[in-house]
Image (tube, rainbow, N blue to C red; front, side, top):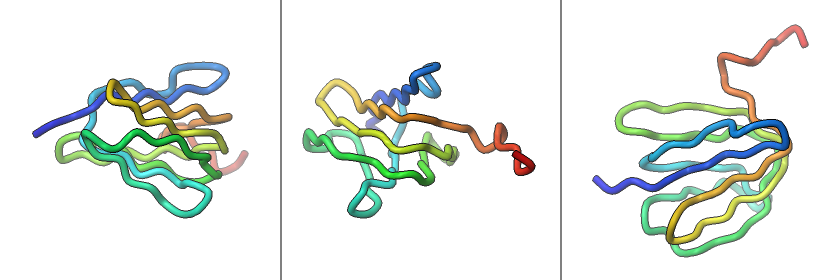
Amino acid sequence: MSTFLLEIITPERIAYQDQIDMVVAPAVGGNVGILPHHTPLFTQLGIGELKITKGSEDYYLAIGGGYLEVTPEKTVILVTKAVHAEEINEEE
């Protein structure tokens, strides 16, 4: 199966960088799904949940607003914040 490189970048860190099968992101107009060989795209993201599929595993991140860019080489997500599910502190 074909994969593509996904990079999720915040002002503080690279939150995620790996070859994946699919990502679903909360675009302003609704969720957008990206698969390998997707048409080039640039869109604004809202606050919400990002779903990353790699093999048979799904990973989730809570993100702040930002942008998603799909190019033939990779997909880059630039966001104000990206928090892995295990990093979420419900008390905060």
